[in-house]
Amino acid sequence: MELGYPSRRAYYDGPRIRETHEAGVVNFNETSIEKLSASLKRKAEKIYLLAYHDDFLENREKIYGILKRCGFSGLIIPDLLTDFYDENEDIIREIQGSGYEYIPFFNPSSPDRVIRNVSKISNSWVYYGLMPSTGINVPYSQDAVVSRINSILVDREINFGFGIRSVDDVRKLVSYGAHGAAIGTLLITMLEKHDIDGFRQFINDLVVMRNA
Amino acid sequence: MISTQNTDIIPENWYNVVPDLPEPLPPPRDNDLHKSSIELLNRILPKKVIEQEFTFRKYEKIPDEVMELYEQIGRPTPLVRARNLEKYLDYKGKIFYKFEGATVTGSHKINTAIPQAYYAASEGIQEVTTETGAGQWGTATALASSMNGMKSKVFMVNVSYRQKPLRKTVMNLYGAEVIPSPSTITETGRKFLSQSPDHPGSLGIAISEAVEYALDNDIRYLLGSVMNSVITHQSIIGLETQKQLEIMGEEADVLIGCVGGGSNFGGFIFPLMRDGRERTIISSTAREVPKFSKGKYRYDYVDNAGILPSIKMYSLGSDFVPESIYAGGLRYHGASPSLSLLVKNGIVKSEEVGEKQVIDALRIFANTQGIVAAPESGHAIASTIEYVKSNHDEKKTIVVNVSGHGLLDMSIFAGE
Ligand SMILES: Cc1ncc(COP(=O)(O)O)c(C=O)c1O
Image (cartoon, rainbow over all chains, first blue to last red; front, top):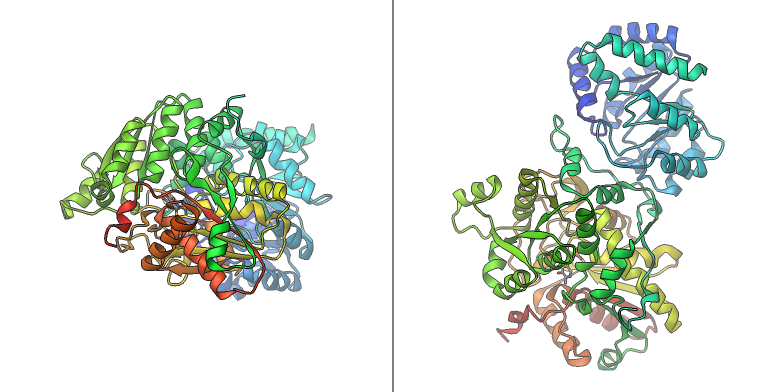
């Protein structure tokens, strides 16, 4: 499970997720994240916090506090390897040195050698975006995208996100060798429409698929 | 067989540098957090072009139909040793030039116009649109569209429209409709015209107009430079050069080219950089448009109205109004993200050349090699001459990309 630390600069999220950030920025308080993470922890093995670089640097102490109190396993910083590449080694070492996993976030534009180098200094699973941003549709072949990252990172757990629109997409990704899939825009859209049944159905289908 | 050109020199695949870059390329960003301008690309670009824009694949097969058109427009272009220039400069090393002016439209721009038009036509599109500054890109778009059975509408920066009537004639001959920008047919154009009825226009405004026109009419927009997909198509320059150097048993020590949006330069140097060999790489920009020395490496607008997503590049600001220099193709405020990244890392050196030096270089090149190069390419030639003068006793092999001919830009010599 992944929770987002609300940001005014959620550049790499699509319009839908950015709206949730906006609401988050207004309504955020530490008690609510504690409650939320406590209930998520009952459902999920591990929970991760996603925070944009600037928010992380500006609220470092607070974020480490949240990680600790809420029992997060690690941190995802979606813009670290693009806009703040020069700082990546220091930040990764700091996060890992503080006892948390750092989840590298790559996408199809990440150069091969960057994927190799960053994966070497981090030891957790890898988050691979199928698109350059969430919520948009760039035509691509799932098969080719998955085999590319699998061929660079052999034996590493890779979870995919960005642009996953159906249970069928997840099924295909898994059949190509994905370990997991992150689903955002699809679920937010359902929630916005108060489509609780659709939401339940989707989760059910995923569970059925996983157990099959 | 459709010509006696040595088509073995034309590569089968284009090369995309992005997966080989030393650092991740910052992706495009939406300007307005409430709208997805990246999603907008889906409505104006052919699907295949979007795919190529964001792909991780290093090699992209050139479709057979595009191959045939490449041959029709004069590919492969020659790589020639500039013996007379070497003698004139009394250089102990070697100077080669790759001559993109040998294509039928007279510049490298046709290398990407053909595949983009082909992909649009394959989707059943019947009309495309674009902008043009100096006219080279509009000319390429006009021909590539006709060759693919489509109409084209070209928004031409108003000053060039008035100064270069022959360019308009060529585009018309190739079948395009040419409209001075700002125009009355788009909202962006009307806005600028209401501020000043005699507005000189700029590339940024013309891009906004073309994009708006494409969106309103559900047609496709062709990208002239800057974007990854364009540079991938332009990689044909460097890939051919590499084969040609191999045939001649040569290796390049120094690579020189001119930079507007970065497409001829990126397309020329990226394939040659694949071997990782140490070499000097010099990008030559206009002193009047000092994007690498005075510009900032930051996210900025591609077009004036900010319709397209922002990209991270060296930029003088999208509202930068350049002096009216002859090398219209070098007046763009930014440069492609991939090239900007290599300039930032010091892998590519940048140099600025003033107009007087360009005119001298063009004269020397015409005089020694017989080629009237485009004013844009004159920057690369001037940097080559400068390099030889400052490294006179070296015995290096220099390869310069001459991106176009200047036979329609002769007014640059009028005052002489
Ligand atoms: C002959 C010629 N060379 C160079 C350029 C600069 O563009 P780019 O940097 O994309 O190659 C232009 C652009 O119009 C041109 O016409």
